[in-house]
Image 1: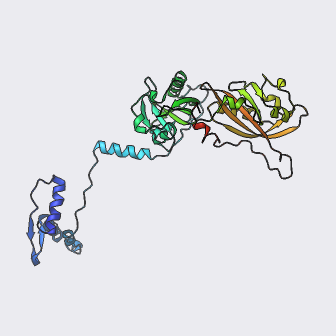
Image 2 (image 1 turned 45 degrees about the vertical axis):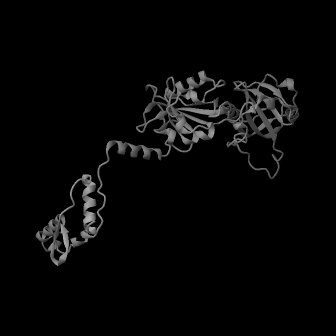
Image 3 (image 1 turned 135 degrees about the vertical axis):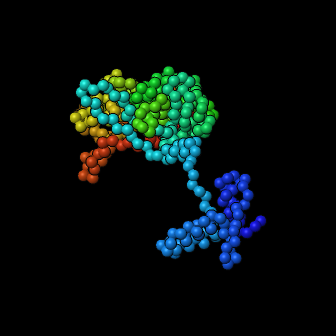
Length: 374
């Protein structure tokens, strides 16, 4: 086996040269000590350097373990290192600067994110190619929480793996094409889990942007649980003050509940076929309410506190409003708008109203994960 110094010297040179050389030659020195040829050369160099370096003790090299030398990484290892580092990067939004007059219109990349978007953060994201068959290039682990698939089950497969008989494939492909052109949009779809169960989801489409800030040939799909209620719930008289409106502009009223009519002193025939502007007054932010209706079309429940007006006596009514997407035959076709009066409004204890109350919907943990049959 040899001495400890021999073993250390053998291990050092065998690391460099693949273990194919003989053991290094050790030379006797004064005092019964052994030194390798390299150590002898270092000692001679010390003597030639003179007194300035005479206080340097090279004998410690005998008993030190040889450290693994640092070498340049090969291209494959370096690329793997860079890719791993990019996965840990934070999301960075690309700002879009206004175009000067007469300048050529720039591609709208609002919302697009820098490279490896499918890995950034905990969002359930899918990166696909923008053309048929829409192959899945990357997939974040969080997608399993929505569709049940492991990311490795989806990568390399076509997007058809999550589609089914109720998926609006034509609209889905159209949204992917829009994102490939540089625009960002959001819409509700029905996708299918790894067990074949249908799920109403909200998908945000955006172009993928590489590390240099240029649009790549990939599209990012951020998939989240959608909020919805079945049409029979919207049609039922459950004692709440609510109306059912169409999901498309101008959002005409299709049905009202007796409680809603009593709250505003209306008869149903006075509002059917019209819009909710009937109960809007000078203190109502109508534009903000319309924006919430647009967002609700993406299967996202909206909440807001707002002022309304009773047409019968023009009195102001402060209400909490919830807009629930209504699913009918696989599409968001209606909204159930529920009004809850705030009895504290106008009292001395009343605080200033909130203009908007965004947040997670109570349906996102329950109804949003139900199948259509349930």
